[in-house]
Image (cartoon, rainbow, N blue to C red):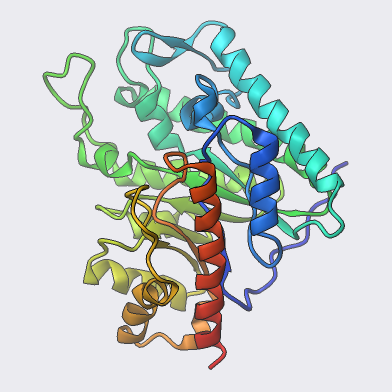
Length: 349
């Protein structure tokens, strides 16, 4: 029987991580760079390399984990099919390769990091991205949404078990990505014809879907589960009601009300993964460390949160790094650890 990992320790310092996507096609190089830049106390992650093509994209990677639901690529994108096709097998093979390489890299380290993060496409964005036999998005059908959430929850355990075997003793953190959530809840995703939009998904259903997946991840040994969303119309309250340990969100356009919601979450013991380092323009010069620190510290201070509460924060880029060059992405990780150091200096007074 697999050994249950220890619970996550109470956070005592600001740490850094990134959101999962990485440039290039070499998983070995990616693993070495990420683990080299994000050693303890920071949070290295199992990289997603969309440049490798079909099956290495975030949607196909997560869809390959589904239990009793097969997928393949059709002209309009990933579709639920009767039996797995070559694209599904390609996605499974790529993920197996990544996990095997992770095991090799971890095995060669003198002092492996205490934690590792993996990413999953969340059940609502998965339903928005997968298509039914008739070409319509699975999001249109309540039964399909329900089945996808249950299938994803069922497949999560095996995924985490494989990662745990590759990184023995590491605590596993899971990031659930919901990039389409504002459109899903707002009813703005177009139908296949493009002449109308799909009906909005009830907020209660979204909460229930997340809770189903989060509960399965915890049962499989995850010590921390966060939901990552864009800042626009981000449903913070529903995410926390589903039992998530925290929220990952870019800071660049948060409203005063959103900051107040995040402050309340921090005060209740939840974690903020703050997308403080804006990387939306890959060719732009990175902002100064002091400016990035201030991006978080200024609203934190204005909300009356104590400096000591910064210890629950992880700092991240505003988005994934796949559009950057490998050298630029590496520089982002280095900059993030310096931002964490700057915030820790404030937290320690």
